Length: 283
Image 1 (tube, rainbow, N blue to C red):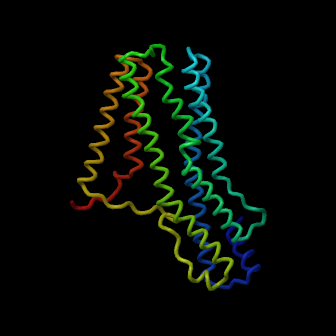
Image 2: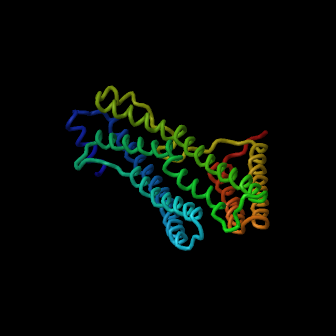
Image 3: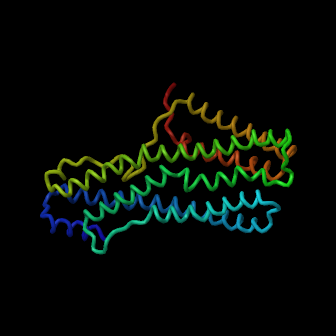
């Protein structure tokens, strides 16, 4: 529904005449459109990646040489099929036909609660099926056997996978606490103010930073930035070296997987942390 229709429907029903109401409607509508666009772009990217991997893993099931590999690919394929379904459920904006502004805000509150639920429970619907598939992957190798080389391989490989999963979980929890929960609190306050009328609308505060525009990056000292980059490079290099060892001593497929994933994950860590665009302050 258009912004003017949303405003007029609730104004005529409640008799609201405050100029503050017009400002709130325009600000809220602009922020909501931007936020939904960000969510949609995120979901489309993840859905596209899941689609590619789902097809690859489904095809791989027909060529797997043992049941462990089939389980690994099966869990991965199931995860890649489920993730787009959960993302679609989370971004649905359930507005009744002819909704007024209050109903529009209420639909946004429901939308935010579902987004928070998705990120809070990311370990169950996102990480668990994919994680099981990745953890079982080396044990599905034709070269797998319970000897010293295999044990060393697991000691190298499994902590790497677990650390990636923990990092993904941490990023999602941080997004909830720093952005989504303050935004939800603002939506709930606005919903209550709309029910109370002009006086409550006059006292409603501004939306959290980042609702209308991206929040400004926090400054970072040169020393902290160097430590971040150096630590990421050292860890990625160690994992690549471990992957080379896996290729030579254990299984080529597992080693290649680790060698390829390590720099990709390192780049993602640096990109998501945003240290490359944060202003530098003097030490």
